[in-house]
Amino acid sequence: MEAIYKRVLIKISGEALSGGKGTGFDFDFVSRVCQTVIDCVQSGVQVGIVIGGGNFWRGVKDGAGKVERVSADRMGMLATAMNCLAVADVFRKHGADARIMTAVDIQGVGERFDRDKSIEYLRRGSIVLFACGTGSPFFSTDTAAVLRAAEIGAEAILLAKNIDGVYSADPRKDPAAVKFDRISYAEVLARQLAVMDSTATSLAMDNAIPVAVFALAQPENIGRVLSGENIGTIVS
Image (tube, rainbow, N blue to C red; front, side):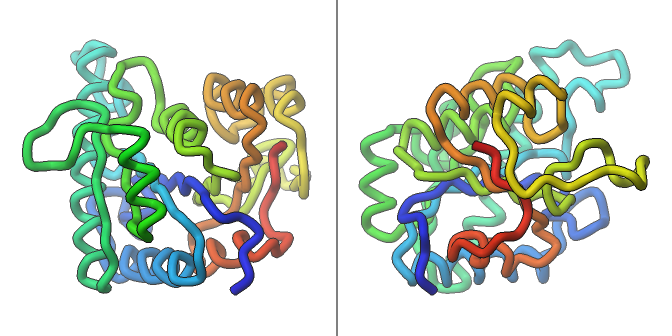
């Protein structure tokens, strides 16, 4: 594979890891994702990963009005750490070197995030998983993904979702919804399209990091995006 990017940040939703079950893991699917990422690394691409926590906890939405926002967000950070632990082990079972770096100190889970060390691992060919979001409440894992991408100098963010691109409306509700091949950050914000939250989109725009949005249902799409194939939507 001839990749158009040499260093990327892949954002994977927690729900995607469940393989349609909604919670927990579908390890057959996780293994396919991991093998695809390993293939990309072996072709020379440096890969960092941020995983959401929605297969365990969706923040204040799951709090039933009983859990305060700060506590709910911290619970979400712990969910991302669990996902990183599981996915890192799957990478290792496939023979890859996977490192976990956390935004908060959790002994035994991973190293505390350090930009220079992260870049060093990437240059060595390690896959670096960034856990616990930004380490602060009120910020989503989308924002964490863009932040880490900016910090490590990623050339693009690969936003692997349950939908195959950016649409003018929710295609599950509106059959007239139109899929975009390319769209600007400004238009995403103006139309309030559900790509990433507005903080993440603004941060990507301010740092001129293109975002490739595509469906993870076929994990091979990761390699297709990296090779420059025109699937999904490019936000730039």
